[in-house]
Length: 392
Ligand SMILES: Cc1cc2nc3c(=O)[nH]c(=O)nc-3n(C[C@H](O)[C@H](O)[C@H](O)COP(=O)(O)O)c2cc1C
Image (cartoon, rainbow, N blue to C red; front, side, top):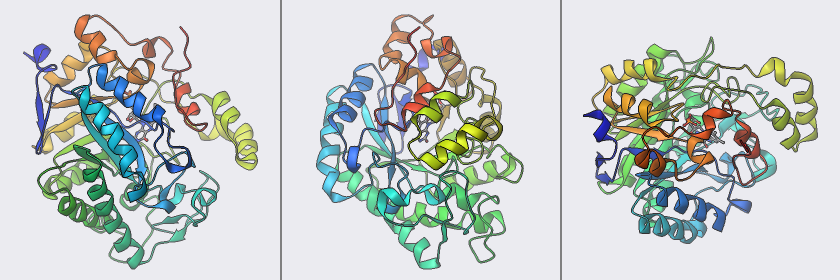
């Protein structure tokens, strides 16, 4: 019965996980100066102690120039030892550890790395008020290889799995999306061309992962606006990722620079986003325009389920459902409808022991639902040390 399946072991590639829950990658902001802090280790240890099957360290860049925040890490040999402390702590609590790798592309901040942002096309982006440099073929090849190098270092650091970020409008997603990819060479135009960089990344990642590290890919069901990647294309990308040897897909949606709350739904924390913004120019722009520019999306539990089911019909590999899970009842329903794992972000930000809570009391509902969700945790991410600020 699906009700019992949640707390049975599951498999992703070479990895066996003690139950069907994954802590979704949600940027912790706990790497000041790019170095994983004790707070990051403590947070992931607490999620592991709270019963999660696998926890995911969020948004680690594969290159220095791919960072959006100064309190964000990029994977390099100098921090392998710090991450080893984190994976050891997680393993001691009986959970598996994963790390999400991405590159900000046009959302890279030159103040963080001293490097100009790069992107498939040199189009101005309102996020960070950036005019990125169009990537050359050799940039594309270098960055595909950087993903492989990051995976090799993750293995050294003791991670059981890696998650390649191919969604949410970051670099790979900027290639996939016709909105940000205006190229006319073999990396632009048809979906097959737009997906060429993703396939190159996957080849390097598979090589580095070998048969010891599980490879998950977070991919968009759709970008969520006209002119972005459509849901039909999202399904085709899922099929491509199956061909490229992904061990599991995490199905999400949205585009941070266009539809930032599409992936989360609920209230848009305009006031908090403005108050935490440190760049004076962006702050002034947000005071004037954030309510016009940032669209609200109403929340209901498991809001991506109907779209994710279309992908479930199209591919055979293990699928991870993410988006709006706050109760045992809905989680059991999602697992019952063919998803192998569920990923959870905000309910675990509100309470790292949420998984144990729904195990002990199946009627337990996260306090995250009681706040709306308010999404204030998203605003705290800009300051470092992302946390739940809801006191109800
Ligand atoms: C504060 C915060 C930070 C996030 N950072 C990331 C991130 O770094 N990478 C990512 O793929 N998704 C990120 N997300 C999205 C979550 O992983 C997840 O897809 C989304 O919140 C929906 O799941 P939930 O309803 O369980 O919160 C973030 C979400 C929150 C709330």
